[in-house]
Length: 357
Ligand SMILES: Cc1cc2nc3c(=O)[nH]c(=O)nc-3n(C[C@H](O)[C@H](O)[C@H](O)COP(=O)(O)O)c2cc1C
Image 1 (cartoon, helix red, strand yellow):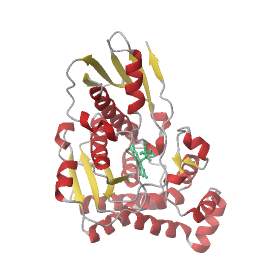
Image 2: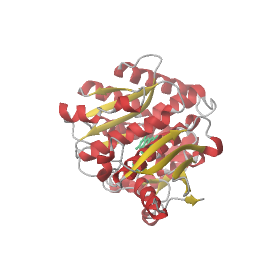
Image 3: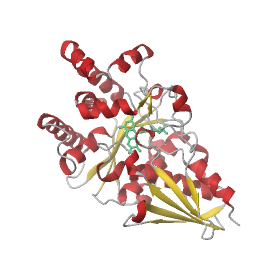
Image 4: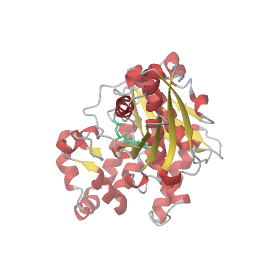
């Protein structure tokens, strides 16, 4: 008998998945007769500019799905995953639970689900050993047609960081992005503790003396004043380059342009992230330029002005060139990995919405 309690427990232990600004864009519909969990995606919760074709939402839900498969198997159920093609009623997938031999190859990663977290500290510039690297990327082919590229030499890491860091620069410079950024930053400890959506300021690893200044930058006129007289966006850019280049490696994962693959990309990301956690290493996603590029070229073309579009295209093409990515593939994710002190704070997840039928 698969009880309501065990399904509740599986879902609650699975929700520590990454999502854009901790948006947690998911809901669950459980059919007790059929023992299945349907996953409904909630794209409206995600940053509209960083979510071309709802792909950020699909990646987050993919990571969540991976956690559910691992957790259900850890508790002794076998699972069957069905990803849907047409997302009818925003249901993107179902997981059917059965009593019987657990069948999921990654069930031994369960212990690391609750420990996985984003770390935005500067990591040590120390190469990751070959055995660890083999382990981290050993399961890629199980998730679909993905390729991974890794750069570990300092000059290449620096060049990549210089291109990737334009995400933060544009987050301040572009007035629409600036507005959304400040809507997403959570300054309130109490709200962060109850798992409210947003980027908890203490996870952003700014030196504490900078936090009052960051708060003031919310005011667009004040930001523009400081930018004109002391070039604040340039100094934010330089600090971001230092942060992005502080790592053992930068990794890119590529895929073809198929929508369903973004769910599997999220599953793959979670597989790598749980292994990173198991090895005592840290991971930080850096996806701004990737999503800006998709939005500027295939989505809403009015968000960026001509100079911004040129900067985005130039940066994306440079990144592709440095990683040696095939022309027809797109880069789905980039992240830095390495040894690090633990993050100063972790984001929390709110109670999931589970509808029992
Ligand atoms: C599709 C996607 C893109 C993300 N891009 C970034 C990014 O560019 N920079 C960043 O610092 N975090 C990024 N994140 C990480 C989220 O901000 C993070 O997962 C969220 O705040 C919850 O924190 P947690 O990972 O510690 O649970 C991304 C997450 C997802 C799912």
